Image (cartoon, rainbow, N blue to C red; front, side):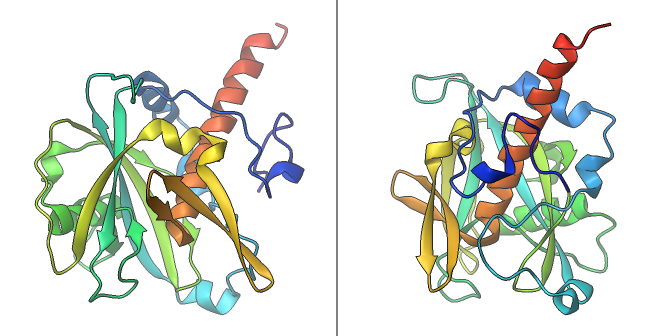
Amino acid sequence: MEVMTKQVSRSNLLSLNYPNLNPSINLLTDFFGQDHPNHRQIEIRNPHNEHPVSDKVRRSARKASVLFLLLKQPPTQDNACGLSFILTRRSETIRFGGHLCLPGGTQDKEDDSSITTALRETHEEIGLEPSDVEVLGTLGKYYSQAGFCITPVFGFANHPVEFVAQTSEVAAIHEIPIEMIFRADSYTTKTAGQNSYYHFNYQDLTVGGPTASLLIGFYESLLQYTQRCRESLTDPL
């Protein structure tokens, strides 16, 4: 899959040397409103410098979904576009305890779609009613080293929202301005042996692993879209 158009070359991926974006409700609505099957079919790349997920892991990967919950609220000096998103910190007593991640989990046999899974898991984890989410759509799939095929689901909700954390799964709930996803300086790399890994940073929060990959994938996809829009305006008739 070609990750970037010519304005952002593949050689820049290691440093994530991308231009900043200014997200808005209209931009995101237009982006997900396209009749664009690639939203559902793309494989979100693994940006980390590590061994690729093996074919064996891919074949046996369990389906999972996460929710990019985008909260609408009046713009402020610290949040010019009036959108934020939610991360949860996993309880220490469960797998990947202490990690920051998007709400979500594995697909149950009763779930009829990735969207159903994301909404159900979010309700179980932080008490948000599925009916309170205006679903925008999905954005591809991501294969993790831990053996999951993750579909990110995107949806709006109106702020304020009263969350109720399921303490057996969620230790804390964090709200972050969405514009931080689209700033290259939000991302740093850390080295472990011969591998290096991206991390998303906001204040005292550090996000790694598949969640960092999904944030970068969202950044890249929206950047591609804005570049295509600019190119379509400059193409001769």
